[in-house]
Length: 224
Image 1 (cartoon, helix red, strand yellow):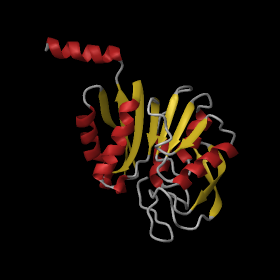
Image 2 (cartoon, rainbow, N blue to C red):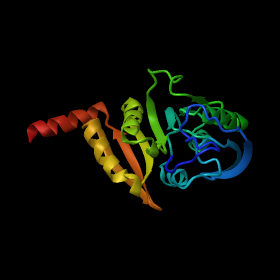
Image 3 (spheres, helix red, strand yellow):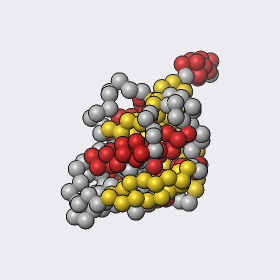
């Protein structure tokens, strides 16, 4: 969610319950080689089509594992969720958004394409015990630095050992400073890096180490 979208009454796409009229329409989009029809509405992020940041993430992110538990954080109407569902039909995919209308649209779009492995929920409906092998996100940068940091720290530490997160952020909206903050905040158990650069966007990779690699790093530090 890299650019602001407002409904008819000036509300932000990250409003929990949009007050603008719910006017549905159908778009045709290409999601990593899958051309599909999706339902969108105003009051939801990128209602006019696939936004540039999400398109960059879809192009640059590596092929997801065949199985595991995945998270689309800030799902909007569901482009990342659908792509994950098409590529990893055996995975369990959670789509999370604060916006009730976005959650409903993602649920409807996944159902329309037979993706029974997708659960679209609000953050309060996601079981707290759930951990993730993969996270894809176009995070809502414009909610402000502190709320954004709180959001990311609510989910990224829930990566499993060896798990990966891929975030897309515009360079001029603080992608490089976010890399530094994530690295300092998450600590040595996580490796944070710039995975790819495209069209003014950065793909940030967060990789959680395994117990074996963490032990090796600790031993090397002691030996030094």
